[in-house]
Length: 94
Ligand SMILES: [Zn+2]
Image (cartoon, rainbow, N blue to C red; front, side, top):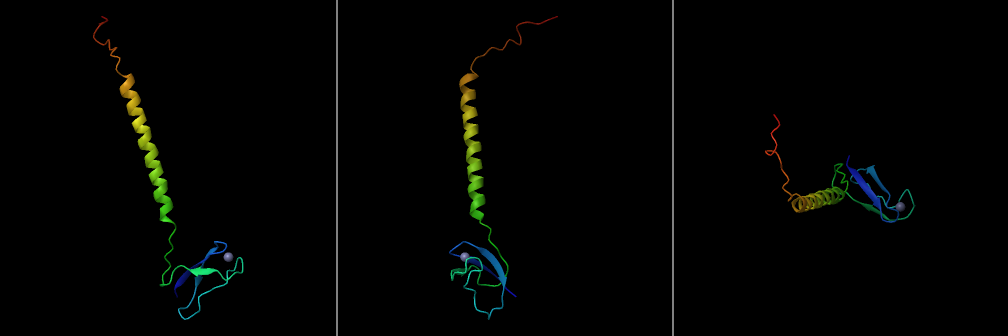
């Protein structure tokens, strides 16, 4: 039996329902009792899309933050590390 996913356009309530193909699609939202249900999946199979867009934006913002941080640290390094105060060979303690 195919699984149908419904979403209420009114209250955004989402649920899954096992239904026969010949059954009429539901219309009444069990949550708010309005006739505002929308069937998300019409072809059988229980594929549920859990907002992949959320992950991409999350990843992108994270990547952006990291790159910005890297750039900042690079620029600050190049400006301050010019003082050549290396005295490695000056004093040989024997
Ligand atoms: Zn509703």
